[in-house]
Each structure stands twice: as C-alpha cells, then as structure tokens.
Image 1 (tube, rainbow, N blue to C red):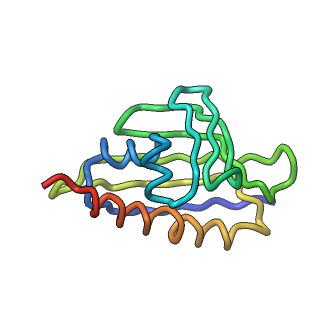
Image 2: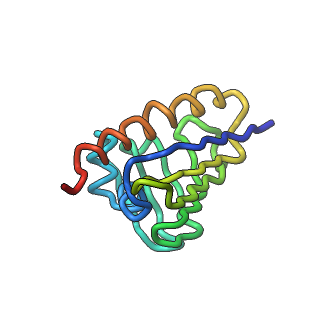
Length: 134
C-alpha cells in the first residue's frame, strides 16, 4: 500500500531561482548541506543527500516544473515514487511551489512527509533568503 504527499509552499524567490536550487547540483548541495549529483536533462539520473535519494528525471520545464521517479535507499528494491514540483509566480517576487509525491510506501509516509518540510522546504527558504540579489 502506498500514500501520497501534497505540500504547498511559498518561497521568497522567483520560480527561476527555486528551479535552479532544485536542479543545480552545486546549489542543491549548498542548501541541503549534503552532496548532490544531478544530470539536468530529461532521462538524467540524480542522487541527493549522498546516496540516500536517487532517481531519474522524467520531465523538465525550466522555471515551471520538475517531475522525477524518486526513491529512498531504505525502500524495497525497485520501489519508486513520482515526485512533481510545480512552480508559479506569486506576488512580491515569490514562488508558489506545489509539490506531490505519489507512491510513498505507507510505512515511510510519516518520515517522508516530515522530511520534505525539514530537509527541503526550510533549508531551501533559508538558502534563497541568504543568497537573494540586492
């Protein structure tokens, strides 16, 4: 049995900056504090948080959306979820990020749901605020 995670997050940065932080391995490494390797092409592979997270990028539209087949190292072999980041402009140079993750193993749902908030959204917001253009 699997579950679905849905988050809506407002970030004080443009969609282009949010997209770059998620898809550029150097920026991703900076905001998470953990190594990331990201091939920024459709069909490209990625690892984040060292090798704890890995997957394949399925769709990209720069500054607008990212869709990936995503898995956690502790999941059963061959188990992937589908992660989607939808970015849209919001007032004041902000971005509304609509996030979904479909296919999360039920026994890992609570940890992953919390982990997105603590390991992605909070550090992403801090990173983008600290690197904001004057």
